Image (cartoon, rainbow, N blue to C red):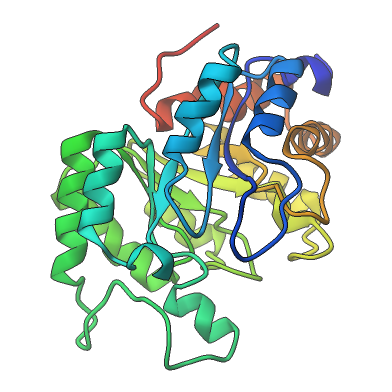
Length: 284
């Protein structure tokens, strides 16, 4: 199968859409959904650093019923940070993913040389904050998926321990190789994180000029070492400087094929694992 054929049935669980209060975006929800439909994709997950995208997904779904559209909320400053009320509302709306802080994370702030700001999971003694456990309970109760956002590697290890105690069933490690934002987790540490229901979400945006300029070969090598059964391919596209997300996924697939990832492995990472991560029924 070529990349165009492999697009059919794919789920991209990480795309950014307009409107966005802080930056221009390449597509809005309707444009993203129509393009996904035209490519034969199964569906997409809308993400924002600033608001819960589920209402957008629910509304656009009525206009483009041929693709599955989902949303979630990122626990950044704009929604009150580690805000259990925002997570509770997300559950009631049918949100699929709760992302831990992204651009508001202390980890990202440190990378920007702003050491006194940012949200952390940990208290002054390096322990998980009580509010994080409260949020995990809400995620569990509502059957949502926990995503690590842009937390540090240390925070992620401790969050995984807390999530295991709360019996969280589905976890996404968000762009683990990224150097520009997020944790930059070594493959060795990624292998220590492996557990049932956990997936490493390798995002193509890390290969883009405005981001990490990572060679796609690095992602392919990490996938081979960790195993495609533990990985998800998503784009994290929507930036004005990049192609539209659907085209981004096609290019991503082309690069993975070029670097030795098989068609069957791509199906696992673009269809099977994303569906499992969102607790969706398997199709085909």
